Image (cartoon, rainbow over all chains, first blue to last red; front, top):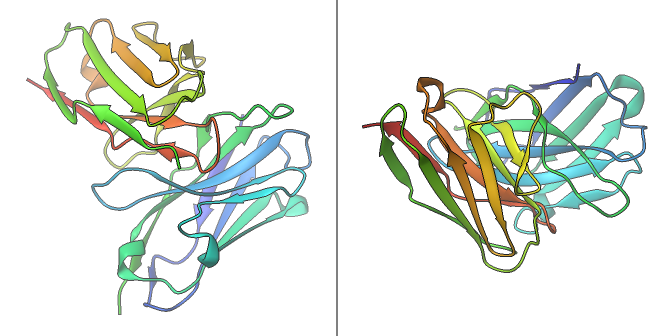
Length: 123
Length: 107
C-alpha cells in the first residue's frame, strides 16, 4: 500500500525559505519509472503543479516558480524535499505531494496523494 | 504552457441525475488527461486517467471520454457521495496543468 505524508512548518514569514518533506512508504524512489511530485492549492482556489522528481534524479519545475524551487530526494530515508525561497503571502496554500510513474517517455497522472499540509505566510 | 479550461464552473444537480463536465486544452494533449475528485479538506482522488481509463476502485458510474483538446467526465447517476469539486489535469507535457475546477453541488 502506497502512502505519502507531507510535513513542515505551518507558518513562515515573508522572505523566508520554506522546506517541506514528503515521507512515503510502499514504493522506492530507486525503482525505475517512479516519481514524486508537489502540487499546491491556495484556499478556495485550484490546484497548481510545482515540481516533480524521478527515480533517476530527473527534475522538472513549474516555469513560473523555477527560480524559487528546489526538489531533492533521499532514497535511503524514503523522502522528497521541496524548498521554496522568498516566501510571500500569495504562497499561502495547502501543499501536497503525490506519486506518479513514467514508462520510457510516457508520463502519468498522480495516482496517490498525501493528505496535504497547510502553510500560511504571514509576518 | 498548455491552458486547461472547464465548464461549467458550478453545477447544481440532484441525486440520480446524469452529470457531464467538459474540459478543454489549449492545444492537443492526445489522451493524456486525468480527472480528480476533491472533497472539502481532503486531497484530490484520481478517478480517470488516459482520458477514459477508470482508476481501480472507482465506481463504474464515472466515465471519461475525448481526445485531442476536448474531454468530458460523466457521472451516469449522481450519488450523495459525488457532491465535490472535479479537476482535470493534462500530463502530455511539462509543466503539468490543472483546470480551474467544477463544483457539483446539491440542487
